[in-house]
Length: 462
Length: 162
Ligand code: HEM
Ligand code: FES
Image 1 (tube, protein in one colour):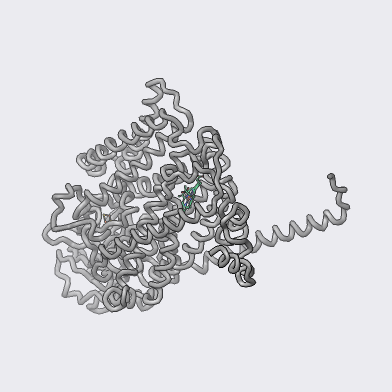
Image 2: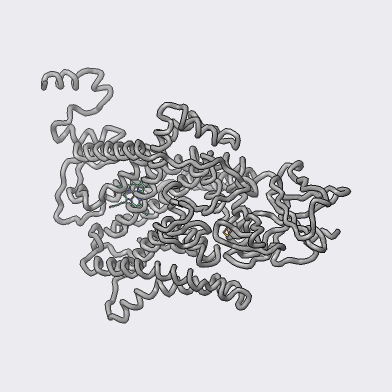
């Protein structure tokens, strides 16, 4: 065996491929990392703490793996799909019924996209709660926020391509949000759609964005992201006790195993559950209810409670700016890489989560039972009912926990104040998403999930 | 080790090249933007899409609301004349059907309701349904769905008098 390896690694062919010997000794294990293009993003030695599964949960890596799988399945789908109003829907139908493994590939692409959105959000939460955004990693956090935005844009543009009722109306509703931006709204929507409404021009634009522009931008930004992780000294883990191991082959094994696990999970899911496809798009008939894709249905829920500009543009924009600004609001380097920073931080986070879990459904039910818009119609100007009341309620609801901390004479650190606000934002997003997805039925009215009328099941269009 | 100071001449050459590269880069970016904005601007609708045949005058009896599928709109026959309403909800663009039983337009997406002249009577819609210009050609009624007119309220001049 050893002589075989010796013969192999000394051969001219091996030495032309690899600039290192068989990696069974420290020197060659280090050389793998520095001389191989696929490995050179890894350090030679790695901190043991950053390999702990309960520190990162591998979420960034799973997101990257999901992206890679989307590139592969997406490229294959392109062989059978033409982005025209006449052919898009029939192409998807024949992909599902006539092309061997066509349905499977479509399922893989669909579930892969859902997975990528989900793990990108969870990864963001992980990085936040471990304080891994602290110096010198501020900028990489901002890059991460950009990656999340691109991930959502990729999912949204892909959503239109099957050209079924689901796609057509979700995109109609989604892009109409842009039209409520004061001044430039209508132009912005027209630029996105290539015309006044969703049609051939919109399909072509979304296709170009989906298969070219967004994946390229994602690949570029992901490279920057990884490079920065490396240059910022690996993951943010407490530096003492310093306990490093050679990164090869541990890191490679983890990466291969996770790739296999994600592939297997996606494959099993795709064998079990088919991606939805409804009737062909019909611009004259809006299905009831018409919902945005699940990661935007929370926005649609917010829209029920106020003016589109306040609830779906100004609010989310502020929230996005806040998230991007997190590392600049809490620049202290202390306790980076520690979940919640301290026991007190963990308590504050848990209390904020409970407060939001109870408060947001209560607000939704309240606003549904006594809608200011209808109660004040014709009695007060629209901006009072649609902007001042819902906006004011949201601001009060957000600031109340901080006031409560003040009253209780807990002087929160900057990190703890951020823990409150971020948890509020994250849990609110989760709660309104669940309400919009699971508790809204025909007419976008509130229903208990087990009492949905007309046999409506939101999972049919997931 | 400290380097000897660079001679003045080569420094100014470096400065010149830096400015040239920086200035050139700025010009390139500006020019790219100036090209991209008009390049990506949607084209105006084709002229033949400008008018859609809605029916003959006698088809519209007073009080009726008629759907014109090809024009994505409704033609409402009021006492005074004809009013064409876009079917596109002013909230988020869903197609609003006329509910004869309710006597109003009722949007399936977030429940906005509109009366026969398109004014909001309930729900989140921020303004009345857009109206569309109508042209009469002898007794043929044509609507122009590509020219939706936004409005804050119903006004008589939106009606084509008969
Ligand atoms: C396409 C989406 C994304 C991909 C593919 C991705 C990938 C990764 C990977 C593989 C890592 C290293 C392992 C890990 O920490 O789990 C990482 C780290 C990191 N990511 Fe992301 N990520 C994405 C989105 C985001 C988002 C949304 C944020 C936050 C706004 C973010 C911020 C960070 C930061 C600051 C680090 C360094 C973490 C540390 O030092 O512990 N990333 N990312
Ligand atoms: S789109 Fe009609 S009510 Fe929202």
